[in-house]
Amino acid sequence: MSVSRHLRPHGSGPVLRAAVAAALALGAAACTGGGGTSAAGPSGPSSPASTTAAPSSPAAAPATPSTPAAGSRAAGQGPTPALEAWVYPGSTGEATCRAPAEYRDGRLRDGVLKAEYWQVGKDGALVLQTAENLPCNGFSDANAADIKAHSAAQYVTVSAMDRATVAALVGDPGRRTAAVSQLTGFTRRIGFTGVDIDFEDFWNWSPDDERGYQAFVTELARDLHAAGLRLQIDGPVEVADGDSPFDYTALMKAGADQLVVMDYGRMFNTTGGRCLAVSPHDWVRAGVAFARAKVPDPDRLVIGLASYGFSAPDPCDTGRIKDSVPLADLRGRPGYSEDPATVAARRDAGSGEVRWTNGGTLYDYTDQAGMDAKLAVLREAGVTRVSVWVLGGNPWFSAAALGR
Image 1 (tube, helix red, strand yellow):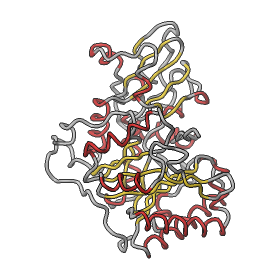
Image 2 (image 1 turned 60 degrees about the horizontal axis):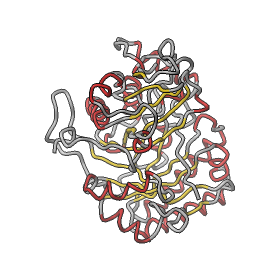
Image 3 (image 1 turned 90 degrees about the horizontal axis):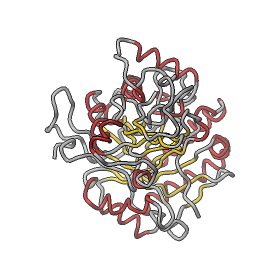
Image 4 (image 1 turned 90 degrees about the vertical axis):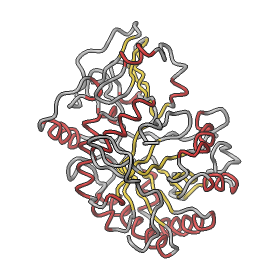
């Protein structure tokens, strides 16, 4: 059984594109390529035949561990944020199989690990992703115990990647009740801290879907809190009211303990020329500013940070983007180089990402230096909690960036 990749076309839609452009126009210096200040992207792709640098166009719940330490901060930056990371299941030989070796190095011993153990089926029923079918990181008592042994808090992630699947669950009161009971009982049995709801395709949600989702969050939060457990909900980047049906304020009032803003996926907004970067710094700043205005308590706001890459046709075709490609896999793509001078020439100043083209294909990834740069942007913006997508063949922060 092959793993279901997370496709995250966040920030899609004309309202968000216009709002981001307006926000970034307010005195922000124009950035080159992927850090550009509009969705239009750079002018003109590079030669398809060449290998070139590619600039881009509630209180009753228990407290989450890993409060940021006050020490070790660079000038103009806040304290090092508390760290979280997702782990998803996969088949033998996939890069995700490297995740246990990565978290066993102690990087999250004081932080949070989120294991995707459940998916929503097309009929709206929950499907447990077991190690029997997905031997790398699928659920087993042993795998759950390993997650617990290497983190201070743990969440069970539940995913639904398309609108029809989300609607099949949240639009049916019986399905909602069954899911709430399953998730609360399962999470309590394995001794995790709480549940992380990752329902996506926000831009296509109907008003009924939005109401059903809010009802599900209310019902799940109530059940989890009664059991002494917590609830995280994963949402899209927004920079203005109405950007998506996902209402930060209403959903936090519905009972979610923390909002996780998945501040990546900008390349899906490309409207011409070369694909934008995964998370241009100015776009991230705009999203963080809006989220902090809606969720002023820093302990209730978590910002997602991208550690992965993608490939796409050049010029960009957003329908053919291969998303969430691990760096471990991109190392085998034509034209990849670790020569320091080559990497420096390919690095996009507006995103920290490394980009190149070869044979009509754009490749983009974040290395450790890029991770450090993205973390610095979040620290400067006052973010105190960061969740990394994703462990498994992708880079991590340097010790210096973490003040260690």
